[in-house]
Length: 354
Image (tube, rainbow, N blue to C red; front, side):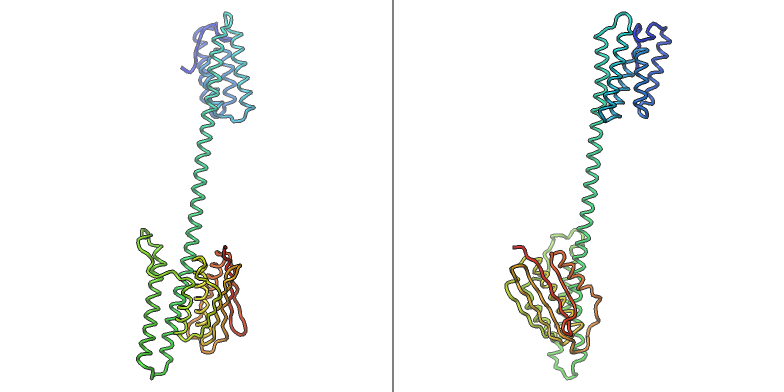
């Protein structure tokens, strides 16, 4: 039963049982609208409680008020109204009011209000925890997307460096075979063929290592087939360029091979890209490559003079220098490039934490 009917309690306590039942039922029906109008229904139930002593309905109404309101002011007002209703019911009961019964009723009403508040607070905490978990999930998703974008950019830079350098070397070597005198020795032809084969093989190996990270389930299954480029390979890079006819002069001050791996890789890629560009745009020109290790970081300078021979390879789209600037930005460094003494010059500064 949602109401307790007890004769001689309430303003209509002396009415016939059908009247008491009708009033009690009407008070109970009011609870159907308690969720959409908790305050108004609560006040109406309080009036019904004074009229026909319906503590169960009042307890349910107070529970709903406890779950609906969070601020202290409305809770205090409804608590005061409920206490007043219980006090008025005590005064109007016949015979003389039963104080113990009124205290029990008051404890029931206020207890249900406290229970409603507890349920509301727990519900709020649950919703807050869910929203926080969703926010963390969204943040993690954004961080993952950002990491994926950065990894894709890194792979694109590495692929460009590998493809541009190796393919340019193949084109230049093949062009040298084409324009060389017909009377060249078989040993020279075989050497050029070996260079083309070696460059193609190295390009395939490096591309396989770069694209290996894109294959699901293969992380950590094998080590890279080729060593990661670093500053110790600058001499080999210059020798390879010289074997194709480039006049490269390397100057190294300090010990770049002792620098962090990311800095060494950047030094190598800058030198590689600049030598490739010089081979494409300024064939036959002298290229000066300078690497200086200073207290504030590594300073690089790659300069070439004007072209002496016709260009043997098609010009690129300028993405190499864009990739180098992005690489410098990630390391906190700077890179400048532009015409210099009828040629071209690239300067880079890479800070190194000490």
